[in-house]
Length: 229
Image 1 (tube, rainbow, N blue to C red):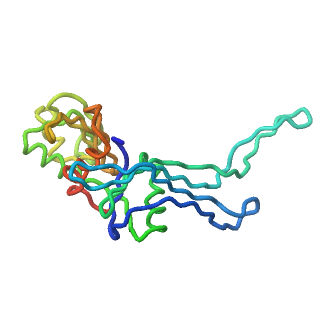
Image 2: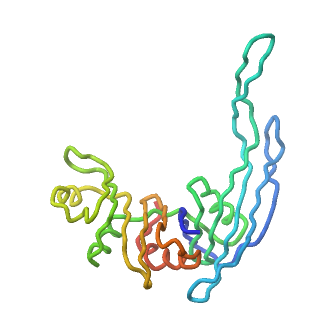
Image 3: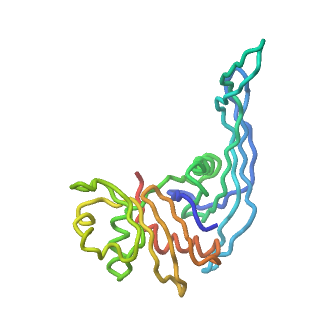
């Protein structure tokens, strides 16, 4: 796993375990919805700790558009159906959970309800993160900004050494940043990453970055720039 949305474990440190359960509901067509969590692999982290990798799924009711041919006419309507939402997850007990996509954030609530772990979504302070890496001489290849005073109220910039470009110097002094991508060295490897204010992290390079290394990287490089929205 090398990407996902981060949730921080605010309390509790126990590992999760497999479970399946049915949730009773009041609905004209359905009586219950299923939920399931499977741990498929124990991940050895570089410092010897064990993280957990797995998959979670929940059923939800959604209105699905259907079409029938009736008496020579075409009838299009919406009908409630059960749909299944799934996500892969990475769990570092007592620290954080990664959902493989924004839609997979339901795994935070699933773990919080079923185990003595409280998992809350977080956001990243991109301005703080940029300040730290910029002080270290690292210059981003991608930056998103908003709330700028001037003609360019918001936008995304791509390029080399973009924060050193005098044309955008005033923009970055006044605007808030909501995403950043950078190349930098970490633990002897050259990293190309992408981080957003909404809590999403992705490692593009190196291609052999392991799931355990990804977990350690989140702890070392990013969590101290996080906050609860």
